[in-house]
Length: 110
Image 1 (tube, rainbow, N blue to C red):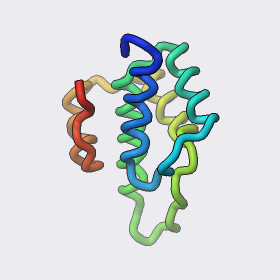
Image 2: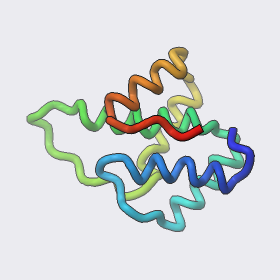
Image 3: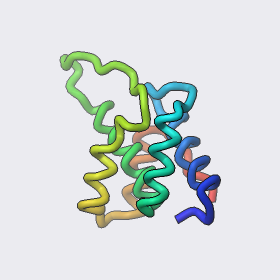
Image 4: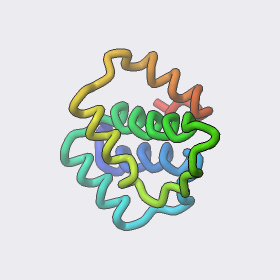
C-alpha cells in the first residue's frame, strides 16, 4: 500500500491515463472512486492488475465482435477489481509483468 493518499492516487491515475481507450482527463467521480479504494485498503498491485487484465480482455475480443466504445471512467474497472479482491491471482508479480507486456505498459516506477 502506498504511504499516503496522494501517492496512491497519482500511481493509479498514471496507469489509468496511459491505457488505450481511456480518457485523457480525470473526473471528480474517478477521484472519489480512488478515495474509496484507498479507504478499503485495495493495494496498488491489485488495482494495476485489474486495469491491465480488463484492458487485455478487451484486446482479446474476437475480430468479428461488435467494437467496444472507449472507457469513459475508472468505474469501468470495478467488476475486475472486485473479482481480484475476491479471488486474488496466485501468480502475483510474474503475471503483473506479463500483463504489462501484453498491454505494452512500462512498469510502474517504484
